[in-house]
Image (tube, rainbow, N blue to C red; front, side, top):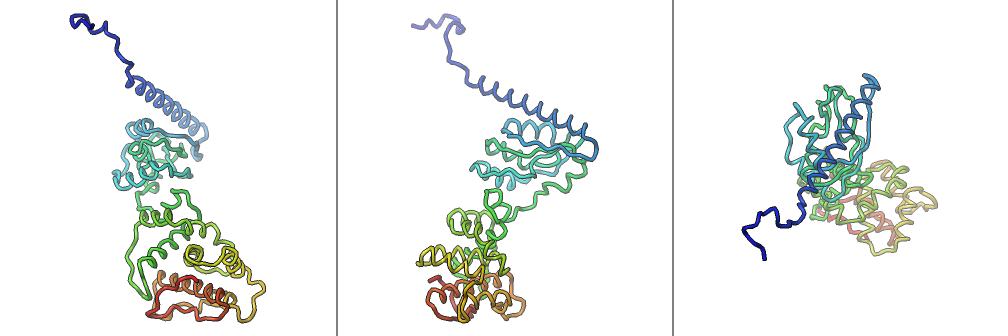
Length: 320
């Protein structure tokens, strides 16, 4: 039985878990100090017109150390940007790029304060390219805090052909919401488009495959990716039939004079399927091209000719 008159020091206590956490944090800080010291030293040795870049994993404790000790006279943090980056990092979807964290010759953080703040907020360990030796004046051109485009967000999430994928995804959202001929459409956030890509694998698959078709006909990448994705997702035809259609569209081989694929190739090249209205929006043009591709597919499946024009009052075509 414990005698409460005994000194508390005589009682055996459980290990102090917090001590181990503190020890690990001290080790992380020691490592980042050595890393930064080496980087600054190498940049000085390389001379005034050279940069030194290294790739390193930065922990939340290390990111906080850098922000506390080196982030002077930078622009105010934008909480929305930090939250957006932190969400990507928290999912483990942040990808290593050439633009990460950079320091000036005199030891200031030039670029990356939002990324480092996101590391702290997310609790994630994130790999960055860290550059030493920039001119301090360069910081005004870096990490400007501009809103990332949908293509930027898709790239961060690890997708490829991101400009075409972003445009195609926007078309997909518009059509799925029931947009028709000359419908006015609202703007979509990059986060909304990322969610759409994540829930429709056909869009990212089409973005990886569209180059083979597009290099010969030179149409709108967004329209082609969207049409490919929609056909692959909604058509009841076999995969072989779909592959055959897009192969013929790409190479133009063995097409008879009445082939809808031949007619589509000619229309895309001459751009005579473009709307006749005065100054149509780019969104409307891209939807018109996508509709023509799907109509050509339907004609190809049915073995007959058809007009490729997307007419007033007509719903967006559904792949056969």
